[in-house]
Image (cartoon, rainbow, N blue to C red):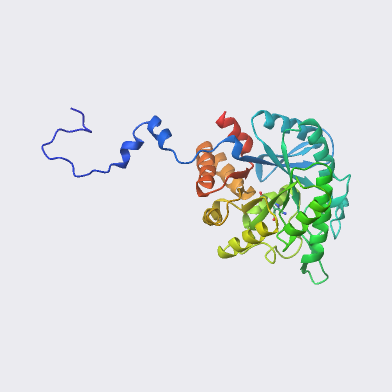
Length: 336
Ligand code: PBG
């Protein structure tokens, strides 16, 4: 007679025992509602000028800025691990930055050269290029700024269109506007179509919040705004209905995939967007979310691997189809 099954004259009146389905690892696998796979992952990567260079980002241990030659090696490796897509961000030297971000649409610029080289060396990897001015402007804002420090919407959209076209010209698979200007998805879609790039997709940063979780990324790119903040274009952290409005606008304007960013503090937004659209949803597990886990793990305060898997699984459970994460390579290795 086992302890769990004492013989008793009194039948149990507990007819539902949820623990029955959690009894063994096999049962738990059978009952699992959400699975994280390598197909869900998009790896954000940083490219810089030069050769033979790989520089770790202090606030993002395990993440590097790569010169193109080493970036190609790294992409070949992550592609071997089964990662389907990378999101590319450039580190632009100060002498190439100006007030209006002209380097962003230089046909021979760092991003353009990098995309060309990736498409030649590893054609199977899906390349997603960022569309926003902050890596290219001396002031670090995502848009053009007037003499009063106001971020100008429509003139910025014109530059973003040039930038997106220059990326399409070198073979990017998706352009990903991360700037939060009004109307940029529609303007970019129209321009891409007019130039014949009907198969270049748009991954729209639709609900992008003005978040303190971007700190380490701005270190990585040296792109922190030199004055003010991004609150006149990125969304207020307190708002949910506004996220649905932004998503609806981007869909109407031609987005192929909509994104919520950051992810962990915005799981409710991912869930609500899931109810609002049939389009694929991406979640951006941003630099600050990465840094928090790394820092606690380095001190031995949390089980890093389990916390990573639990966090990314929660994003999928909330409704995300794709996750941009700096953990992509580590997770691909865990899931092998
Ligand atoms: C800027 C951009 C940011 C990130 C991606 N694109 C930062 C910002 O808006 O200031 C953040 C990514 C991260 O924190 O991991 N266009």
